[in-house]
Length: 195
Image 1 (tube, rainbow, N blue to C red):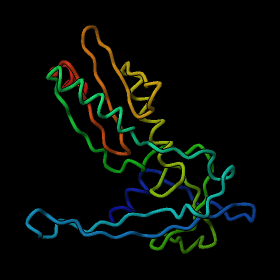
Image 2: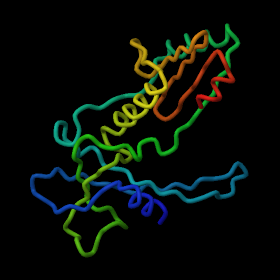
Image 3: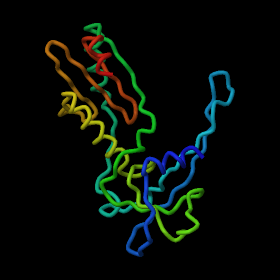
Image 4: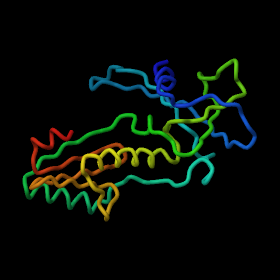
């Protein structure tokens, strides 16, 4: 199973002995068939999703976060883009909720297909984020914003999903909606270098 190897090589979790004080969350596999445009099967996908409804605030997570840009901001940035004849580039980040380091200790039952027969009573301590965790979006946003700040972007005071970069006479707007990103700028050559 491909995802099994990826999770192990990525240090997504470590096996630890169970202790009664731990809040253990469950998980489930979500299966999907991905199709080509001509309706032929491209591949079979499996995604491990954490059952976050058993997470407890203050124990497994501290805050949740919604990364949804306001419609008024989208309309404003699009009107600026159209009136100046600027270019737009759309990005979709795959596996957005995976690979981000967790700030809180989260323990999960060993999922089907990953149960260690030698230590079957142990649990997984999650090191990296999984789909379904309450803090998954927050850790993704923290990672993304830190990366953008390193390039000179700053966050809008009006919407946390809007980042702005001024580079001399050039200006760039980066809008984030969960795992979709729109990059709009006044200089397409410089814009391509940023991407």
